[in-house]
Length: 220
Image 1 (cartoon, rainbow, N blue to C red):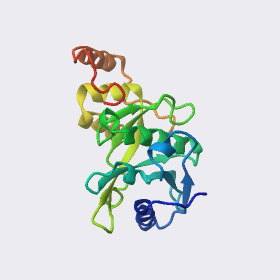
Image 2: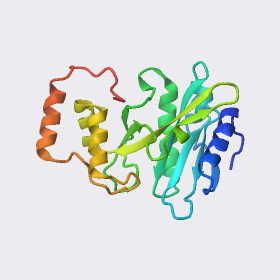
Image 3: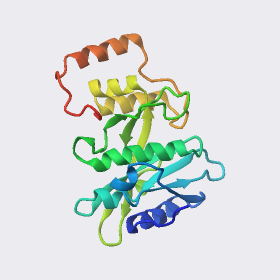
Image 4: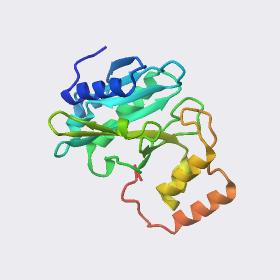
């Protein structure tokens, strides 16, 4: 276990402990790979389930120093059904690209492919960058002592069809579908909320009428 946290990560850890007082917090080092060069202070804080609660919360820490602009930057939270290094790797991958800046930088409403199911056997192989609705502003807003600010956004696993639906119809339409379906975000085997063949034909038709080239081929 690596406890060499950056100043912002230390403050974020205190913020998480205050927000989730019944959960055990563990600090995990970055996996092997290029994340060490792009985000030298990268860690993941893993929060175990509290009594009567379900799921493991994984939060990036140290990304703020590598990406902050005028004292403001993002960290990301991923809620998973188990504690797995797979989720640390997913967070490291997305953090690496986010820290690349430009068309790779992530923000609220963006969707990105992760190249594999987020959990083995899941149909969800994309991520929607969402507001942390399950936990509210008390998680999202983390003020730093020097006046800086961390905004914590939620990485919600979605299917390819849901990503296509969002691109064709907008973020609000997709979020409305997810809410109406009453999805359990940590369920790796949940069905897509837009898998109707007729709906997919309409989505495909709208996408075909879009621009010939995508300025952000990796994210949307």
